[in-house]
Amino acid sequence: MKPSSNYHIPVMVQEVISGLITDQNGVYVDATLGGGGHSSAMLDILGPNAVVIGIDRDAESISQVSEVLSSDTRLLINKGNFGQLDSILTECRCNQVHGILYDLGVSSRQIDSPIRGFSYRLDGPLDMRMDNNLPIDATKFIANATQDEIISVLRDYGEERNASFIAKALIKRRSSSTIQTTSHLREVVESTRPKILNKTLSRVFQAIRIAINNELEQLSDSLNTSLRRLRSGGRLATIAYHSLEDRIVKKKMANLIRDCNCPPQLPKCMCSGIAEFIKVGRGRFYPSEEEVARNSRARSATLRIYEKRESTI
Ligand SMILES: C[S@@+](CC[C@H](N)C(=O)[O-])C[C@H]1O[C@@H](n2cnc3c(N)ncnc32)[C@H](O)[C@@H]1O
Image (cartoon, rainbow, N blue to C red):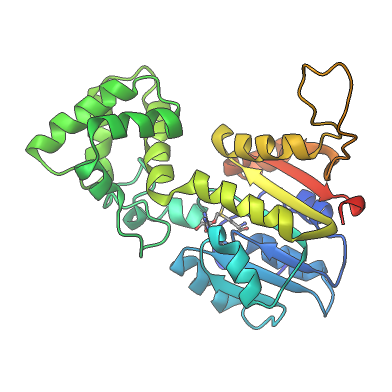
């Protein structure tokens, strides 16, 4: 495998490659290019006529991957949002694809860069935008959101029980000074004296990041495109790092992997439906203990793999 552009270690790379690649010269999408680790592993085993369409919304990721992998003409690098997958595929003159990978969330490079503001462990500007063209960063969000909006974000995207308490503390603090660094946000959360500080900080930072990057809606929209754009026998692989992302994938696929979608009140099946997708293997995979020991960021990963059935065409 060629070195990827930075120290982000691709998660469950062997499982992804063996689950996703069905045709050595097929067309694949890496919807979350990041440091290019998964793309690089794909290119290693793909044939000369294969194509990998790599997408990332982060300009830094695009330039880092371009430096290392752009000499491989099988990789088409796109700066964009996977929410625009449909138009990206159209621009690449690509109708249907053999496989699509989503390795969700942020890369190690993004988390470990203080100026990106993703980590509560590092002091830096409170930014959290994956794409720095987005008009609202975390500082602006906290400065302008109503108390109810902050509560909803912390509850819905952080599953934070003390959302209301933390939102009140944020509103109080912002009335005297702008909350504009990760340390400011951290101080406010600390002032609410949570039982397990790091867990609360991680939920609060996650919630605000998801909100300003509109992560869940884009995932849902993009999956709809993916399901349509996969050819028969093509595969979808998703790696989620928290239950909100994983639930979106699981819920969307639940009806599609069931033959019968009749209302549960019916005594017997009237729809004669046939599932459009099947799970690959067990359908759900976790990193080995050995991988987690090597790369602690893999510990919360859930990989799901589905195949579009031949009969759906
Ligand atoms: C976990 S990293 C991917 C790492 C990559 N698989 C590797 O091996 O290096 C997730 C990447 O997805 C990107 N990303 C997240 N949401 C996105 C979206 N809606 N559209 C495009 N890229 C997105 C992030 O900017 C980040 O670079």
